[in-house]
Length: 95
Length: 338
Image (cartoon, rainbow over all chains, first blue to last red):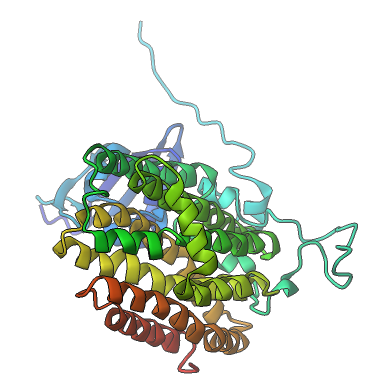
């Protein structure tokens, strides 16, 4: 692949009260993020990768959060989940 | 014939309420912030309180501890009414199940008699302590400046009724469904030698004029009483054949962990305030110097009664350890002033 430019990865997250903290946390951890609001959906895009840290999400939500709960928020994604453990989720293209 | 499906985005005129826009710009934020930021009125008060002519109805001078911007503190738990109620309903559901189990198996009555007497002479009378602490929190709910602070105090006040209720239900369960033990517990609270320092302390804190000093003074007692009774003693109970004690105290300990979250955050914000940090640290140090010793003395009286009843409880030693941890915490917060 090595085209030189980083490909975009994306996450589509349901636009709801519960997900607002999650989106804020992703925003905080990924400064290059572009965010688009479309009805019922928030589309997040970044070049290369998107990182979600459990600690950041917990501080935004004000409660404990397991990375598995991310399943409930997500509608669609572009990229691979290159890491999904107890503390971190990383989305990026792997090949 | 072909159809093309397109979505048309209609931009809302505003994303959120004016109180949010004024502070953070026009962006959607959480319900908690919508219902918290700048909700309490700051101006156009028509009348002054008749009992304090030099104060406004909401006035930051009700406490010596100040914040440049009261909303630099927000509740880390983000409680507004619904999440608070949901969370506490869960807590009390859990407690209800525990108490039902204890009743079904008559586990409280099967505890060693020494532990039963710890319950009746030390733990059950504390429902009156909770009641006093409730009044102190209510004062905070009324006199604190800033919705974020008032909310936390209100919920803390509700919690105290809940805690007292948990203790009452344990008392009723231990008394086989009658309230006799609760009457006895009240008598202990009024007459028991070992409870008088605590009762006196709570009653003095109830009439402290500065709401923040009251809340912190009660917390100085809490942060000794809760770890001692509901954490350290709980370990002793488990190995000493009083598992029933541990079963119900876990819920009070859960509450205490929750209470810590907002109080510790608030103390940190007070101590680090950009405009008032030095004064605040000095005031915090004075409050700790005034009340910490008395708190230790009051809880110490309970610890020695427990030690006299349960031989291997070692409560006084535990209390010393807890006191030292707390002292280290306060020294850190106040920059070594205590």
